[in-house]
Length: 165
Picture: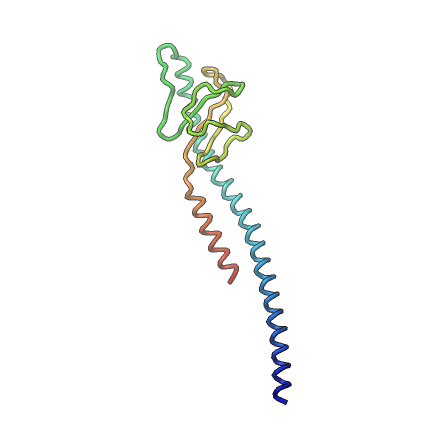
């Protein structure tokens, strides 16, 4: 009698192990898919917030730079030094998107967006209403500090590890 009980117990345990394995596999797949979709949404939201912060700062820089361009425009024969800053690099383009002058590290500009991150730099494109020195577009470029990205990865890793527990 003990031999038959042993067979029944072993067969139940095997089916329970199989069910448990299927359940855990399904659980991990669902958690992984959920964390990936939430992580992508969270990344996109944090990137938009960071770009909004950069845009606020760079629009202040652009305002000051436009004033300097206006002064250069009015005193052009006497003054020929393009305005520079330690905080950002800049470039000016004409209405045909032809480069007039540039101090940028990344020469390729995407004129379809007003602010974007590319190759470790944040580019801000300001369209000018008045044409100082034939300028239609002012591009400001700053180095992208990846602190927000590192913080984001740490938070996502923390949330993912908590969700698997």
